[in-house]
Image (cartoon, rainbow, N blue to C red; front, side, top):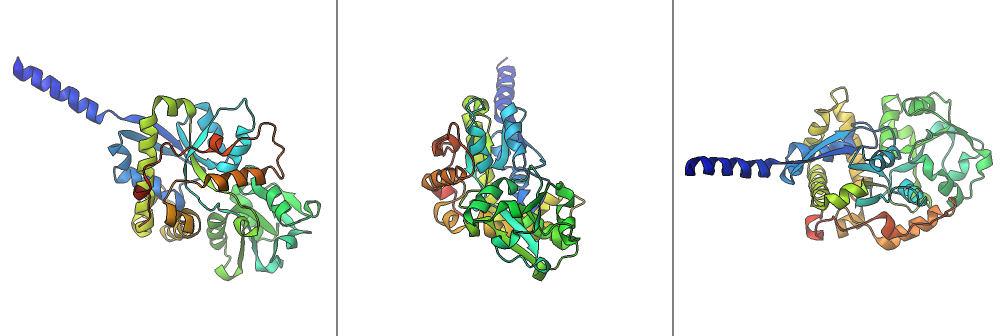
Length: 333
């Protein structure tokens, strides 16, 4: 009987050790280079070590994740923090918060080709701008217009689909496009444009002082499962650290999930995002995942230049650091 009790006890302990919390995580886009850290965290067992069984699904735009998480269909997601600010302006909406900054510098950009003659933001006047309606970069167009004193009435906006955005630019059907710079850059090269022909105007370099994409959490899930949320953030940061340390190894985790992708293309896309978006001087100083609440407050103010608030959120309504591990665990090696 003692032996039986010991065996049963062992099974119960083993069951508790391996009991995992299921988490569905919504990406903003397809399985491309910059998504590698999440798959690295899966393959290296970082999520499993936190007691999490994580499933990652692709998305169709950096705004979509907010609705997915709000509905409860996904516990966590990857989305544009500036779109979250606008979403939270409506008091009737779910009180979603960001729990981890990922793109300390946003990837928002205006991308064009040298043949168009567009060299500065003002040069967009009299031109056709191709912009998918749900595009996170296009969502910042009004701020870009305001910051650069562009006469928006002189810019024709062409609502284009994501798949045809870069081909239309190469074909001359539009003069410039909005997009995440590293994705559009690589897509243009895939459509025959050379590195020397591509012109990238990062919105951050032209007066749009915003943060980029963040990890957001469903508030009900966070309240009921705070340890799971903290574990997800901790494991994701480890995934990013490993990716930054060795992009060439990290990209293999991505390629295992997207076998039709080209390894060299996705590796370059990943490296571009690391150098300009994941790892900035602020991140090297303060570690991954956090935000400067003063900077976030200023960005909320800037959004208000072109977005009429009815219930303007505060920085603490948008981001919480309660799930972040200590700074020393978040540093980039």
